[in-house]
Image (tube, rainbow, N blue to C red):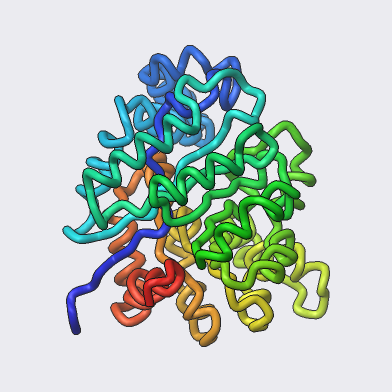
Length: 349
């Protein structure tokens, strides 16, 4: 078998300069400046027998320590050390200015420009995407600049922070540009992650796979990756609690099953998903992924992605978890999600 050409379709290199000052909470601001304080709290919670609190604080410490990097290049250097030479990475910025949690030290334009410079420094290995919050002034113009002037390969969305996937600015000004060029989209699609100032029920509604149905139908040449394959909590619920196969509401209410149904139906041929973070969470998920991929349509629409550096919150290294995934799927299926499918999603094959 020929050498595997891996494309990781979901990574991040944004730093603390791109995160609002008061995110995730104003009371955590001192810990963002001094992450070692979080480590101390985690150790203290462990001594007191508060294992869950200790684990949560430990994850937050690792995330904050990573976010303190001096620039995106520093984070990318840590990433490439985890993969074979020649691996490509779809790098996804974050636009968090619309959260209303304080100022962002480096605005989105600066984040995009820094990413563009990084892509030029690593030609062919970094595939940059543009971030967009359609509620903010100049959002569409910045996407156009990234695509037309900087050569970005696609768009990153995060509806959970407070906007619908079919927001008018996206439908009228952004998606037509991507559709005309056959470019790709990555959108957060799970109950976890960053949430704006809205109820969890509303955030879940905006994040649900079916929220993208009108977009997929209106722009059939735009290849949309609904990331995280439904998310950790819905996988856990499906595996641990089960699902009534005779109850349509139960099926539609589970992101994992709803997304599988959309892809397997064939009604949305421009719909994809990636395994980022979710499949890095639990070894118990892996046999289910292999079973799901027995369906021919689904097998051709799953992408390899890790969600680095979010995965740095976990105890295992990026390399260890990626190899576990590769070993569990076997070479044929891993090649499908890491080489064959990414090339098609990106319009290369």
